[in-house]
Length: 379
Image (tube, rainbow, N blue to C red; front, side):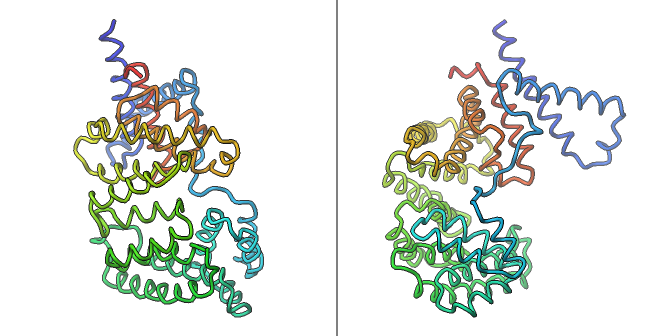
């Protein structure tokens, strides 16, 4: 009986992987499966997915929602107005958020993205208010987003020389525009420095210059959440650092943050970055060092959720940390712990799954793996 308890989850897991492969296959051979076989595969897959709801209380796949950015009241209306050529709602929204660094950070990204597509409204804003600090910082963000749109998210080997030339040229324009943003900004505003982080990454700033930029940002907001995540990318091996520098940055961030800040996610992201492409990632996720980081993140999350004064404002970050912990527990074979975090996520598909081409599929796969290991991990 004990052997069956171990074997059955493994069989279910193997079945899910096979079914997932079939669902994703694009080959003619897969397309030519007999109708009866296709029906059987679909039925078995549906049974596995129902099991997640009936036995573990998880939201059905059809109700899952991918969450890429937190909802901000008034933002959709401001974006619609901007698309129609009216910059005033965007200006009012940023002005009303003065002093709230986290909210302003969540606003400047979508506004910059919109202007990267069509900047007529932003040009009109700058023409009417040439000394508007918010318009200046949105200009930098728009140039950054335009540059990365030109480069694309492809590997460097897949990006043409013409794309790279245009990418660097537009980032150079963003670098110049940032001088204006710094000059116009309030002394305590970290945004002009935050929006320069991708400039530093794309133009290959030397480490010392990046540290100076980081010092300016953290002098204004030591716990700037999005800034820490961008900095982690700069320090990773694929950009301008190494595993050692990346982990040194993450360790310093966690050590300097109070309980409930949720910055422990940066350390989890560092481990995830290091393990990409590793042959045996699951073993790596079970190492004492990684499990210690997971326990620190659990304590950080508990502190954030226990404080009603901040839990509401931190809700998007709380969801995100639940997601990262669900992934780490799943990879470490801790099914029960993973399921607990999947329940907390409800219908929300957050990071780390949002980085995949098909977030819902990979999210569902991780849930099935966690369910297969539920009760067999000793947790």
